Image (cartoon, rainbow, N blue to C red; front, side, top):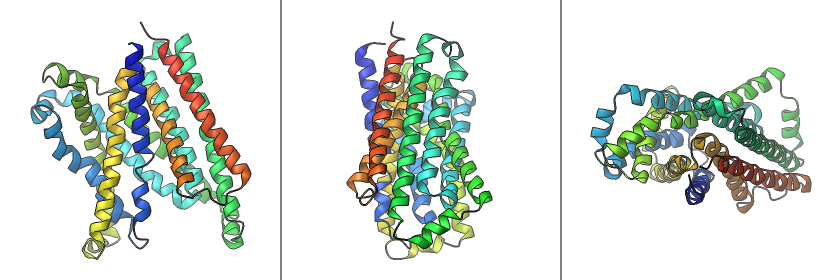
Length: 353
């Protein structure tokens, strides 16, 4: 593992985070009357089924032969943890209705960083945890987590300061019943743990990557397409089934025949390209970071994505009218996240041979 490889790996993570922190932007242009499932159903279909099936054979050498010959033993763990990742994406939406976007995202991202960094290390490199290198990486995770907490606090203060002119809404939030709050907290944390299963799934793609490279002579960028596809197929089981259930229960299949559907589908497709670009670049980048690449890469990737998302928030006017305290906190949170990524990079570099 040399400096050039590390640099390329972190650049891939940064570019992936730009895509990941941007994929929700097209949803701002969806008509307000569009049901949730009529946007997110096509989005998950494009992400987990259409794009891997249509682009996989074009981008990966001997795509069908690769998966046919890999065997269930190689594919089962990425599929299972991909399914859990898909379930996490659904669960996050449930928490919004209980505790709001800012707190839900803060808890979700915090749980993702902890789970996505520590679980792969505990599963595959337990001996590294108590080493000096492992200690520095854990410190980096902790610093990133502090940055998430501060960023989340800033978002909550922003929402409160911008609601000061709406006393009825503020009273409603302040009078939230305890069971509702607890349910929201539970959904947000569980969704973060489940979403982080993408990183765990990625940690099990090594055998498939080896087969794709050695037996089918795929270059690293093609290998990343193959490993991405199998995780996404696992996610299709939970996400697409849930959206189909919502469309059926709410009777909203008929909305696909209304004016403006083409626009909605186009926006969902744009979101899907950005989303899959993010996870493709993650899968391309983390192997270049060495044996602890998933753990280091996931924490760094999530931290970068939070920074990008907040920068988009400033650009699109989400922070316009927010209190000075909330703005100072978000700047501090971003600075701490950057510091955390630097600590992660330092810890990872300690493993160079």
